[in-house]
Image 1 (cartoon, one colour):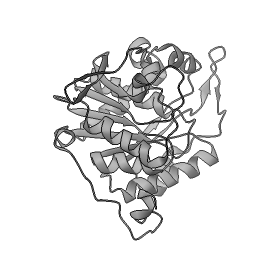
Image 2 (tube, rainbow, N blue to C red; image 1 turned 180 degrees about the vertical axis):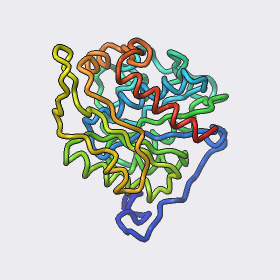
Image 3 (cartoon, rainbow, N blue to C red; image 1 turned 30 degrees about the horizontal axis):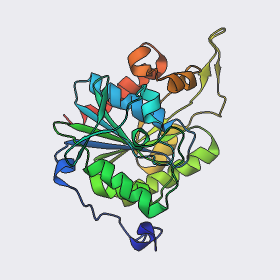
Image 4 (cartoon, rainbow, N blue to C red; image 1 turned 90 degrees about the vertical axis):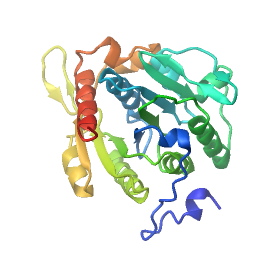
Length: 274
């Protein structure tokens, strides 16, 4: 039986609240998970740039890449270094003031990650609890898409105060986002916020706004599920190239609409924590 099944996932009467924090994780005052109901919505781009926005606000930020089968955080940050350790602790990489840990730095290039669910959950737990997070006051975790065992494991081991759900305007994405909200509520995450990514595109030539993926209705969806709405981010044609080359929107294109939006999101998250 999977861990999710053993905790009664799928039963509306069951709350998944048996958190098992370690001392080092509990010592991090602000813990944020970024997740989505499906892949392809720009979740990792949001997580990486949100971590940097929080760092630019004066926080000491750690970023954990918990997407074991598709760890892309290091590439997006332009980090190409082997993992390091001291004693029994894993030392995170650091770039732009953000401390980063990912399984990608522990694998040969292009090596596939072939693991069953319980093993993936165990690896995530080790990355979380065996990394040297000393003096980190904010931890952002980029979770794998969906609501599987790995998401359940990391949420139970870190007891996040904030869950940020990334969606897009399409009807399919909205349905998946609704399931992600339900999952976050079962985990009893105190604060749940939604971000609508790829929400419209402004033509750089004529200035006309085009809803390539349908009209954004993020506020209505958030209201329907009783959660917060941080805001919407427009489509950025340069974002895919940025991610491939390690160019960070927050660091390298701070005047872009996406960077300004994510900076505003970080500010709203910190306002409630101050």
